[in-house]
Image 1 (tube, rainbow, N blue to C red):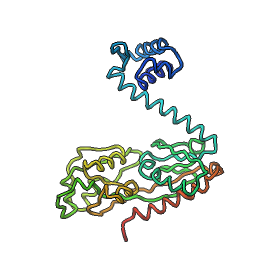
Image 2: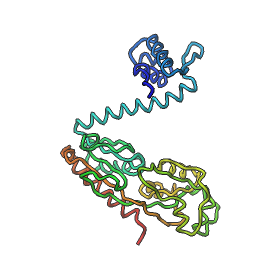
Image 3: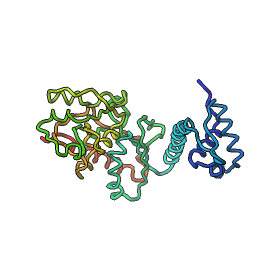
Length: 303
């Protein structure tokens, strides 16, 4: 395993990438421009690659340097988030960890309703597909998918369903006489992380209507990204109803044929019982369970 570059050198490189200026990078770090230049040389020597170049009197990232900086930025962002999570864990802040798309497309959209109920409780939302250790204070509550995890304190939230949806513009002026006509349009595929098992896909939906979809041309690793592509009119997606409620209400997405596929497993809420002593935590816990029950009723097919 190759040794990591010096941290100070990485900090100098990140500052240059963020500010776009040697002078501003130095001011950001509280050092001289010469000190930043020295750290940049150390970094290039460590990685054995040219990361910066002169543009007249200015200094800028090379194309390779820009690519490297994008990765480094993610690392420093993770450091910042870790520090914030640690700070919140030791303060009277309720830390809710969620799967990334669950945060962005479901519970994050409902938090205004919670703040209307309790404006005093302080809540920190963390999106992560890595499971935190609640027993060690990495978070107070966690929304996760599937029964592969068995934390000591958990409850089922809801089982979601997927249904074919698209932007109205995609089918404007088109005649869809039956569900099989959806297969004529671009299909946006979703491939979950193998840890979560198989998600309902176009092959399964095609079997339900007695047809076979064309080979996948475009596959997304996150449900949210595929939904965003559908919103942009790029194709049909098997959208989870929990993630597309507002778009259906506003007409940004439509369901030509309401044939729903259940997800293989439910979503769950886990919690650290010690954390429920935080201000507002028990009420927040009850509210989350209530939101889960309500979503289950919305997602289920009409009886």
